[in-house]
Length: 170
Image 1: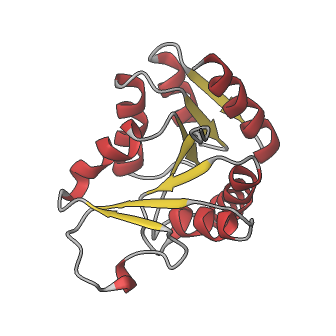
Image 2: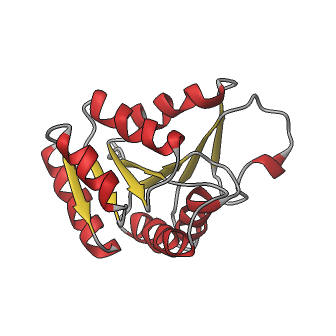
């Protein structure tokens, strides 16, 4: 009997991601795979999603899942090349709920726009632990004020320690 692998969702800005967020996401994706966890992102070929997937794909035995907003069309240019499993929802932005509820722990990397904010809010609504990695202070203060289950990390190693603690408690 095999042990089920924990799914860690990494959310963040796509096209508008900062260079810092992209670098953090790539390192985080690699570390998530090295820990034997499954990486789940929004699957797009930009920003935090693409960077985390790139990092994860460098590790042997990785599993990268992307939950995409459109229906499957066979056009792989709409998703990052490193996906092992692409889940086409046809749900547009409503797919954010699927992203979050499919993960055991959700990480927001570097902040983002309304879509990333909605994923953080859905994580709290869905009872998922939320780890904020190098997010703007406004984001940290806001999401931490909403209740329990929110942790804040300044770097990838601290983030992974928090993820691991959340998985132990789950």
